Image (cartoon, rainbow, N blue to C red):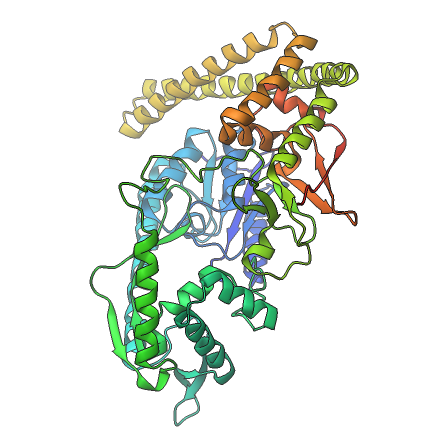
Length: 562
């Protein structure tokens, strides 16, 4: 039951707005209203418990600040969550119900500002919560339908449906009264020249990669070069997308892709539609003539047939391999220090080389120095051996190991104390439910809450048992022979199972990266932060505790060019 005064409660604030077109001050407005409500009830919002998601959709729970909020609730750091409205937490009915259940399960309250401070943890307001969650879900569904309907109308009228395709631009159209009524698509002359060049080069036999490199050398402009996370320059995949787009012959399409949100990751994904695709002839948008289009499509089809997997030449996915198959343990770990692009394997038998991936894909990086794969593997594994298996290194590792175990014991004690606090709260909740039953309250929700509390108590007891066992586990340092065997096993793993070796090596280096710096004498200087304890203890975390880290290690190796 909600207390009459909120003084002394650990109160968390959650605020969110969903669109880049909305004002960031929306968060400030939500926070201000929350402060007013909480203050009027004698409480105070903890400054460390303010969670705000900007430009994040409520259709998914995969929001960074929201996840931090729920972690704080589950860790027992929050007594009350205050939000402007249920829709701030989620616009999905199933997610909203799950959120409330999680908050109540951990003994916290959920308060809505828009409803005058209604506490949805109270049984009386649970029905209201369900109604508001349904309204939020209906709003989102209705918004999707109306947006789709409007875009279909624009498509049928020959107007832009959003986005921009290379070779075209949009022009705003206004009605008689000066109001904006839409935007029409027109050809962009300079970009259209580049599109024709791409088709002509493809028709004359140039590969996707060679076309991309030629455009980069010429400094041809790209679409949206300033977009976040977009690297400047043409790549083969961009060229491929242009060559397959029918808009360049005056045939626009809409709804070719059906978008959905992955429930596990929260990311938007798509699948190609088999029906319901809208097609429209717009000759004024034609950039490529039919003969050139047919010639290019015929060549692309021939290339596709040549490289399509067959029973005699199956793809890695067809063989059940997970991820990209490689025979090189350092693939994906080596980074060009000039442009921060992963270095990739190139060349043929008998020698394979690493080169800057930007040089291979775009041709715009200044680092064109190759390095033999076998020399990289040999030099780096040798350097690792020197830094880890030497007597001095083993002494250092054992010292750091002891420090890490000591820190782990202290962290374990902190976790044990938190678990005991949670257990005490569970037992108090169970006593409260017993009193409710004794007073004649037979609400099914009370029985459900009782079962949840019992399950949580059993889970916390198991956690305490595990933590107590770990607390009294004796400290054991690895022997010098064990360290040497570990390094020897890494060498063997690199030869027999390079994929597994790459996973181990990736955990040994800070951020899983080795910076490759080309030198004037034709060699490379490899720089990386080595985390040797990760190898010794088989740690799985990407960001180890500071005690598990060593200082940066600099490894030099010859480029080995022929």
